[in-house]
Image: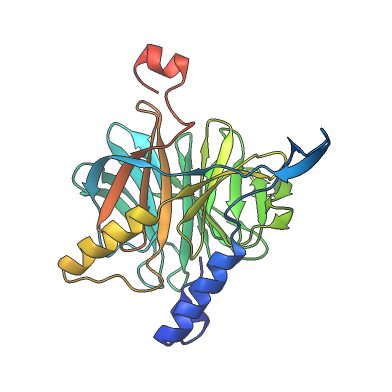
Length: 302
């Protein structure tokens, strides 16, 4: 995800204007045909709105307020993978959830690169960059580099469905990539109200759906991976307000680009971990329609 200050200089008024425009471009509902009766028994089409879901906070954990979070994934055993951005600060790390203690970390191999999303598939961690067209793989246990790949265009978010990597590039497209070659296998356009949903940022694949932070908004989209349709919006504005207050009290007030960015599924509890860029908190939340699957509940673990 591009840093606003890098794209163009912003006054406070300009930043507020940009945020308003971005929010206006993100649909708050998705219309679908339904029927209602009219006088005389005639049926008329009325819009059926896609649910707007509000997460319920279960637990709060500390988070490194210096981390410009680009990617997040729960690894199990109380640990999570995180990638960070900004030139000179980009990298991947594995941290302890309860304490935010960094257990292992490595810098993005290209020193001038702006790091973006990351995903752990098997024992391999993949990490992409914003405008360098470069991706890297690391051994998850040591975070030592094991490979390099190239791709066209920008890199924003990264996740996987157990077989393929899924990547966003700031447009309305999601691309499935071969983890061995990074070649595009297929792509889908994400839409709501029949219009493209752009600025897809951090991604997480959860129980058959793709979840995506929408840059510069307080919305997460739940996306059908085959049709690209947004099936629900998750409203995290309450978390943004809380964390803004917390950061200000800690003397580290958030700026306009310290937005919600970071989604990780905790399978043993059926919850999501949500955070943002330079946020001092990781929220563990429950979301309607998301929970333990029967086999996970029976096993008591992922």
